[in-house]
Length: 158
Image (cartoon, rainbow, N blue to C red):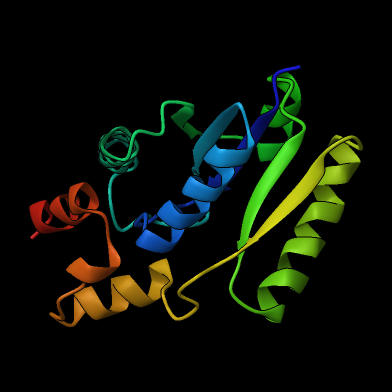
């Protein structure tokens, strides 16, 4: 049986922490979908399609042949159900992330009761997309927190 997993997020931007979660998920699942979710109530800092292309370049560079990147505007649990994906991947930095994710999991289970959540421990707990955006906004070098292709997207917005 083909085991498919979904790793959703805004990935605004996609960090080395996200890449680490993709690496771990790629090793365990036959197919991993990195889903860039579009949240109508949030304004993106970086174009979703440019981020998609950068993530695709990154997963190709690292040889993750079983990873697909998608931009999606809709309910994530519905996407998973429609595509017969039974595993939701989430990265955890701390206990606050865990409680936040568990609340979302409960809502998603209303849509798809068969959905299983798989949590991976984040290696660099200080790195978040929000932190990278803020540092970048104040002119700090964030290149060490991002894959090269993603850093190029940030630089292209200057």
